[in-house]
Length: 163
Image (tube, rainbow, N blue to C red; front, side, top):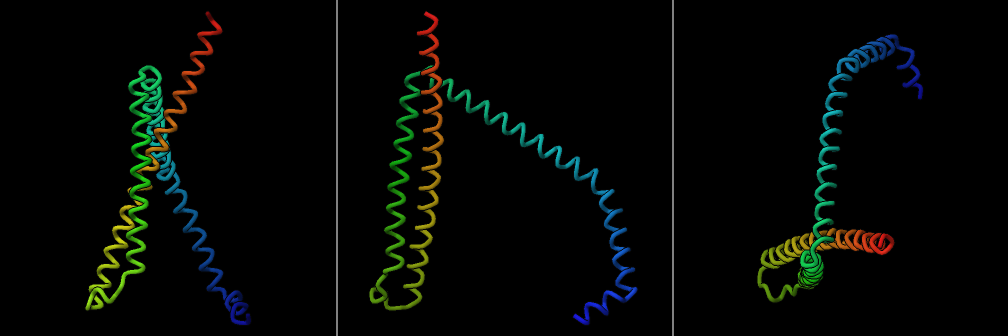
């Protein structure tokens, strides 16, 4: 504590603080324009990307609403992806169990056991990642089907109310 008080009472410390404050102020005034320009470009890029994504999503929903074959194909794709995700998840759990409970007496050398366990952990990781990606895509398709079902219901209600 005493050392801190002596350092604070030193005029060199105060002089360096003032110089650092001035330098930061000057630097910030020069960087502000560049940072504003950068963030405006990145936000407009994100906005354009989001609008394009939303437009593509609406087109997919319109296609599913207008065509029963596309609706059936989307439902089939969702089920296929969910089953594939479950299969890969179970397979990854098998590899994880094999890696954890691998019997070292099968392999005569310790480094072979290590490599087999590492290979099984690698397969576990890859299969788990693929499983999660497939599940995510199936959930996206489920969202499309639900949105299409809602839109189709609204169209039917509107047609019944009009005529």
